[in-house]
Length: 150
Image 1 (cartoon, rainbow, N blue to C red):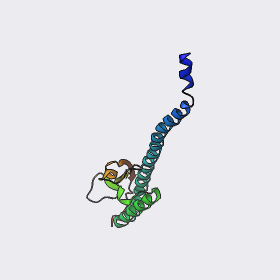
Image 2 (image 1 turned 45 degrees about the vertical axis):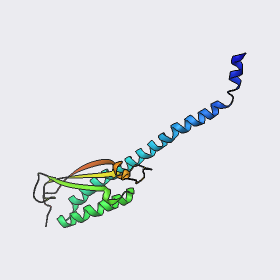
Image 3 (image 1 turned 90 degrees about the vertical axis):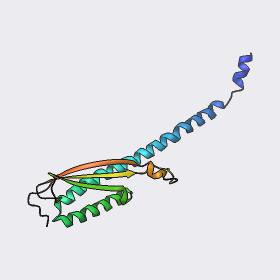
Image 4 (image 1 turned 30 degrees about the vertical axis):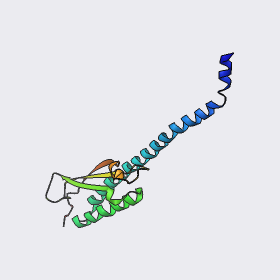
């Protein structure tokens, strides 16, 4: 009889426990999904920027036009993916290494790094800068042998 009374006093507690445990598990899972979505968006931005910059430089008429295309493409990709332009770092190299890059007949290697801010991180004591996730993409494009650097 004593045991039956203990069971009766616990009525309705399962619903409260279920809601509490559900909230405790749901909040981190939702945050994880949002954070991974932002990191994936940054990854897409880096990949798109590297590919389009490589194509733009390879199709440019000269070195000055190529530099303009790099900046124009970087700004467009940053705006499209909702990231700050300064968070998108572009590195262009040529293989074989020459004094002028891009150069005719070279293989153009474009590397783009994007630093993605995690959601809901306050900018207190520089925490937002310290918690950024870096993603990187590289594209390779063969330059035409007839390309003119002038």
